[in-house]
Structures are given as C-alpha cells and as structure tokens.
Length: 219
Length: 247
Ligand SMILES: Nc1ncnc2c1ncn2[C@@H]1O[C@H](COP(=O)(O)OP(=O)(O)O)[C@@H](O)[C@H]1O
Ligand SMILES: [Mg+2]
Image (tube, rainbow over all chains, first blue to last red; front, side, top):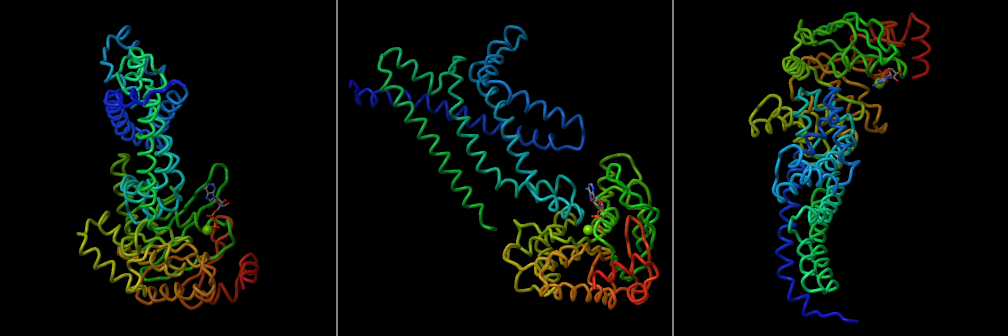
C-alpha cells in the first residue's frame, strides 16, 4: 500500500483553514436557523389558519427538496434571472440557514407539542399571556426535549455544509478537492479532511451530551 | 360574586353544556357533583374562558369575563386580568415541573402581577406555609407526593388573591390516604370566607362544607339545594341513582 503520513501532516494546516470556514458557515447557519426556526415553529402551531399554512408550506417545501438544489437556486438562479447577486459565502450562509430553519422548526414544534396541555392551561389560568406562558413555562420544558434531536440536526448540518463546495465556497471539502488536484494523493488528503470532520462532529456530540445531562436536574 | 347565565357549549356537533345558569354569593361554597362526561369540567373551564362558551354570560363581581372588544390585544389583556381573579385547581395539579414549589407560586406574582422578586418570594412562602409546606419550598414537584403537589397548586392559585376559586376534582388523582390533607386545606379556605366552586365526589366534604350542592348531568343542572336535601333526600331519580353509586 502506498500511504504517506508525511503528506497528511504537510497539508493538515491548509485543510484546517478550510475547516475554520466550515465551522463559520455551520455556526452562522445554526444561529440563523434556530432563530428563524423558532418563529416558524410558533407560526406552525398558530390558531390563525393563514400563518399556520404558510409555516407548514415552508417546512414542506424545504424539507422536500435537496439542499444541493436549494444552493444552486440561490447561487446560480437568483443572479441570472432575478438580478440578485450573492457572494459564495453569502449564498452558502443563506442556503444553509433557510434549510436548517425548516428542520429546526419541526424539532421545536414537536417538542412544544409533546408538553402536556395542562401546562399551558395552568399558566393561562393564573393570568399569563400566551407569549409569557410560551417563554416561561412551555419553551423551557420543550428545550430539554429539543436537545438530542437538535444535536443530530447540527451534526447533519455540519456534514451537509460540504455541499457548498459546489458553489465555489472554499470550505474544508473544497480545500481537500483542491489539494487532491495538485498532489494526486486522494487517500492522504481525504483521510485528513475526514479526521477534521470527525473532530468537529465529536465536539458537537460531547457538547450536547453535557447539555442533556445538565438539564436533567428536575427529573 | 359569580353569575353564570344561559351557558351553552358544543364540541363540534356534541352539545356539552345546554343552558346552565346559577349564581354563587360571596363567601359561598358550592359543590358540583355528577357522572363523568356530564360537562362539569367544561363548565369550570368556560367560567375562566379556558374554553370559550358558544353563548351565555359569566360575570365575576359584576364584570363580564368575555371581552367586550374585538381588538385581539385588548381581548387578551382583559382575559388575562379576569383569569388572574379566578383561581383554578386541576385534577392533575399541573405544577410547572421545571420550577421548585416556591418558584411555582412566585411565577404568577412576578410575571402577571409584576411584584418585585424578593417581595414575591416572601408572599409565596406565606402561602406555602398556609398549606402546610413551609419545609418543602425548595423541592421540585417530582420530589413531592400527590397531596403535597396539589397543595402547592392551591397555594399558587391563592397567591394571586382570586375573588373565587374553582376546583376540578382536586382529589381524584390522589391515593386515598392523601385525600384528607387536600380537603383540610379546602375546608380551611371555606372557613376563611373564600368563594368556592368545587367539582368533587367527596360527598362527606360536600355535606359538611358546602352551602349548596349542584347535580349536573348531560350538560344541565338537574337538581340543586342545601347538601342535606340533595345528598340525603334527592328529588330527581338521576340524582338518587348517582349518589347511590358513589357511596
Ligand atoms: N376538548 C374537547 N373536545 C371534544 N370533546 C370534549 C372536549 N372536552 C370535553 N369533551 C366532551 O364533553 C363532554 C363533557 O366532558 P367534561 O366536561 O370533561 O365532563 P365531566 O368533567 O363532567 O366528566 C364529554 O363527552 C367529553 O368527551
Ligand atoms: Mg371532569
């Protein structure tokens, strides 16, 4: 077998720079996706038919089409036919955020709906408003139940962010492709990139495991 | 104090309340009895508008619970204020599991009444002491017995200083040996002049504490009167058959 660890060590720093971009993209998509996802989740359980339908249409549309296609629409479609030109970075963040918002919204909605109806009633019966009850009573309890599926979602997002390599975003995946093209050492380069992805996903697993245990106090 | 007039409520095509009217005077204790599915819970939930009645009036101290305006913001504000004046205790306690006993009571005081946190904690301690739980204030609900949880729930409602307290089968979910401690808190409240409307199958409690007993079946008040009369000498055969089954 022809495998040279020296090559792994030589290109690791360059790949690490790509990994930093991957982390930036994922972090931004997580923040945007969570904020947007919370609003979509609340909208999808609204009593108002129109608001509810719009929210459910959004999650249906985004979850029912490939992320790769969504990225292409934003990066190639928008500038050509709508006159909206985005940098690769902006297009990547937008696509990943819109995509993760739909998945996060479903996770938050399911968690909210899993909370006993009596909780909302008890909160309303002492005179709390709907939003006070949501913020102080329902969401803190739902939060605990969201942690494990959100952890999975964020890991999936981190891995799927490699698709932005196809819209000329130089992330970890794209860096690896470029290194491979110049060295023709696919095993060493992709193995090193894989190790970096593993490092990042393991970080998520461990962090969310801690969160889960810390939130278990009242049970 | 409480006036209910011509209350109607259906779920889809199923009529659950078919014109319920009665009044409860200040300081009066009214017990509601009746078979399961008769509409007792729905009646209580319509009084504080957790369910919106299809027709009819509910007044607390002369003020209609139903908002008079169409503006959603004003409607919500009116309902929140009216609900804060109507205490409700549920069959399954519905304590906030992520909050300690003290925090359960503090919540409404700070969030709804905007009382400063330190003051709210003092008030909450007083009410928890009143229901005999001074030594449990820092426990989470999961660490309390059913009877203790229900007493926290009563303290949570009382701390809002409601004009009336609604109880929906407050002891039905309890082990028999824990029923007494909850009933004794309720008896204490009644003796201190609280206006109370309680759905209960504790006929002994109804006989001793209630000023009036109402028998509700099939969405209607079938019979009402002083406890001795309704419980010992029911006029309506449905009341008689129900009472003989509960005893
Ligand atoms: N949210 C609801 N949706 C549909 N039907 C309901 C709902 N709540 C209660 N009901 C029905 O209304 C009837 C009265 O219920 P309820 O008021 O709970 O009776 P009770 O408290 O006297 O046992 C029952 O037939 C019940 O199935
Ligand atoms: Mg009931």
